[in-house]
Amino acid sequence: MSEFLSGDLDADLIKESPPTWRLNEPVIYQSDVAGQTFTVPAGFVSDLASVPRWPVIYLLAGGTANEASVVHDWLYSTHAVPRAVADAVLREASAVTGVPAWRRWLMWMGVRIGGGGNHWNGPTPA
Image (cartoon, rainbow, N blue to C red; front, side):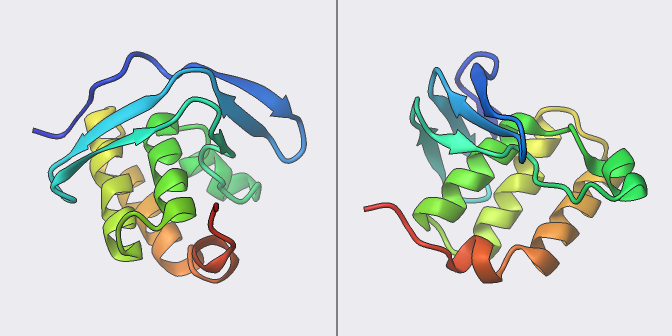
């Protein structure tokens, strides 16, 4: 069963614009979609859900699924799984945290359409 194995998200805001967060504790997620458990290490930096700040879009999808977004950001930065799997993990992990189905679909569609380019193809850590 997919689930977060770590406690509540523990991160500090390290930059205001754009908002950027650093994990104080690891985030551990067991994914059925990927068939594995991911550990996002303490110290990892994420922008959480990078939803465009356009009023209607942000109102619909912003500020939700923070834990799932951290896992998704880590998967994109490490390429631990193919991009389509990383996006599926975002949707799955959002469901685990109680995000409504319509919002999960919007977020998933957003990363499928806008997640390529600089986000997926950007530099990977050494």
